[in-house]
Length: 303
Image (cartoon, rainbow, N blue to C red; front, side):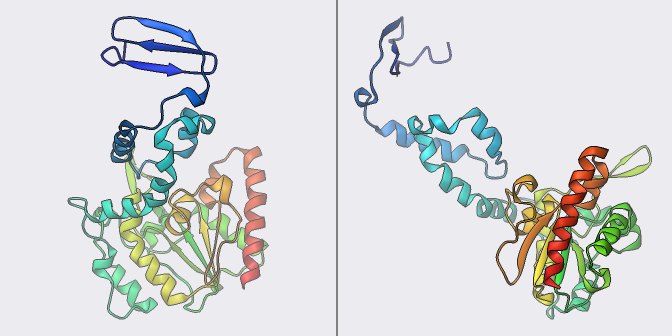
């Protein structure tokens, strides 16, 4: 019914079927060597597939479920999937840079001299995205300029937004306890977030956390890049997927990449965000906290 206006043939080793516009005709199966060779229509199909591909909505697990890899050899579009995935981060960046009404970013507010005090002062006036309109204030990073280890979270929470300091709420308290057990001194670390303003929704008179979008992360990234350049840490520990996707890969998945040191000067590593641990049920939380502690002990090796 979907392709009634088209003439088509399906060939398999077991059976074949053809539609001439009026009737289906079934026949014996044939081998791949008897199938037609690639034609110009496949080039057109690949062009169409590339044109409709949305690099901002990559879901590899779903793609493989709906389009199993074992069938890829018979699908012309699969020849360009690897290239499209490789190009996706830059295409997303280009889209964000040219989106109407979203042309500003933190880059417009960076000071000429990018010392930590200068960056923190300039960030107070940042209007690189719309979050500055509803947040109480910019929550910039804190810590020594010569910190060897840098922790990067997602965004400030309600308490952080009111106080202007990162990681002081329930997640921060859990982080402090974990750092102490791992042999890390908070005052020796530089602690910041990928996004410097609190994004939230009002619900029953309370400000409910809302994760920042990819646009917010991209718009705020110049601050994070400047912090890294000023501090030159040996290790950057990404707390949660948002930070990891900002610094490691846009397609980062915690269950696959957690606890793996990557590169050097600085080395990048990801672990759970403390707030994610607080939301887990008791059984899952115990296992995840053990993994979290193992990652912090690993990070302590960069002191």
